[in-house]
Length: 147
Ligand SMILES: [Zn+2]
Image 1: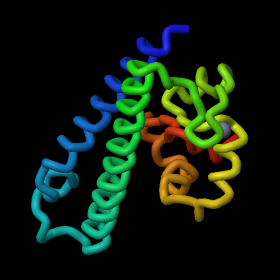
Image 2: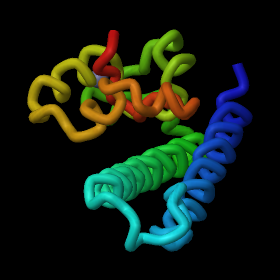
Image 3: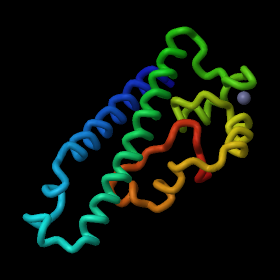
Image 4: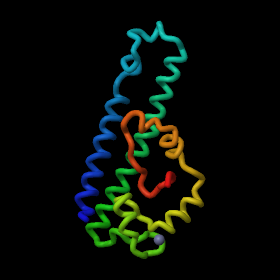
């Protein structure tokens, strides 16, 4: 298994998603709606558009976080600590690395730290299926809430 190749592919993928989100967020609000003029719009439409923006901003933050993790993993690969659990220093299960190529925790440490977290916001986003609906599915590094 070529982890480096997988990580770099992952990095590419995330960078593209980030770019797409950033492009979306650059478009003036009025242009992202079907209406030509904001004035004609029902306030609820604008509210939901604003809500979408908020969500996009949240996703963007997640993607940037994910990208950081991938970059960390590449660093680890370079200095020979890739695949070593950050908590217990044991080797991370190969199956797990295969699924979450940029994970930094072994399965049991991830399980433990998951219990400590008050469930982070990304769960809400992915749970609702919004991302899947938009054809944007990705796992969040180290967080595997859906298993
Ligand atoms: Zn561990």
